[in-house]
Image 1 (cartoon, one colour):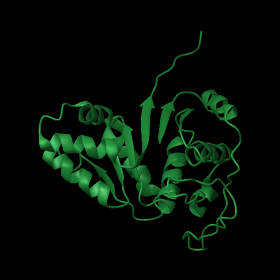
Image 2 (spheres, one colour):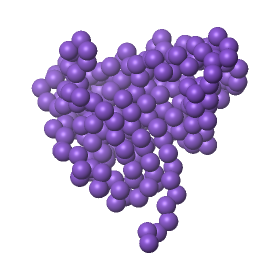
Image 3 (spheres, helix red, strand yellow):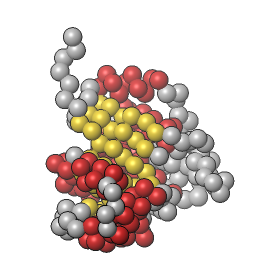
Image 4 (tube, one colour):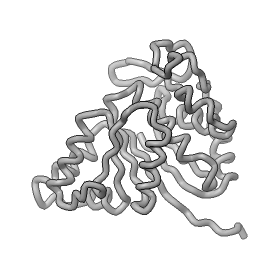
Length: 221
């Protein structure tokens, strides 16, 4: 499943949201205990069907729900309706810088991983904003989810990158990759065994793919 996130203008966000039928999911706190731990209460919200026919419900964590503005609640429900439905696909979330897009996605990712710890999250984004995203994740962190990337550990060689990917695969965690790095791995010719294994890990691991794109848009003519 994939979400394409694009910084554009606020009108784009409203138009995209209107094209999708309203989600039945809402920001409820009854699926968490008072200390923020998830419960097994599945009495409301959208259900996520898997091959094993198991279902679950996705709700924002109480800490996040209390901070969300109305348009962020709508955005969260938009993500749920497109990514956690009976037949999940993908979606595009386009909005103006500063409107809380990062917070919405972080909240959704943490809520999803709480219910599906076996799924890995992969965030592909411009390398220049990677540090900012990791900082935001730590700011809104509600549980200790490891954050991995190649750059902070100077994993330049395929063998070093494979070590990072192995850590990402074996535990509930989030991996950040720059656009160029991701493309080089999945489109490479797999000249070495390590390169081929890196490619297979990224392509075959069951994961959510978040693709960040920044578009500079001038006034419409």
